[in-house]
Image 1 (tube, rainbow, N blue to C red):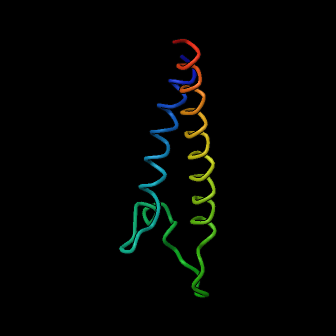
Image 2 (image 1 turned 30 degrees about the vertical axis):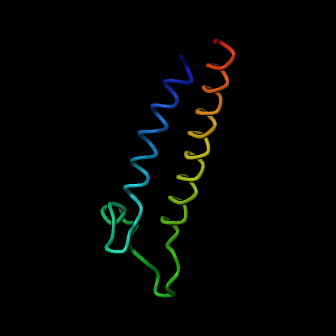
Length: 76
């Protein structure tokens, strides 16, 4: 039950984080200051942190799916 709830929470967070990423034409991250690029041309600190957070949440989401699959296999 706990992993099912965690999967739902991680899914919602992952959707939100992906929507906040900046695309070609800008994204929702522009609304929160993530669109302020440095003049050097690299990614801003906010965008890099958003990438890291998205990666961690994605890995946790994937781990929940694996654990739920293993639990379902042992229960049947």
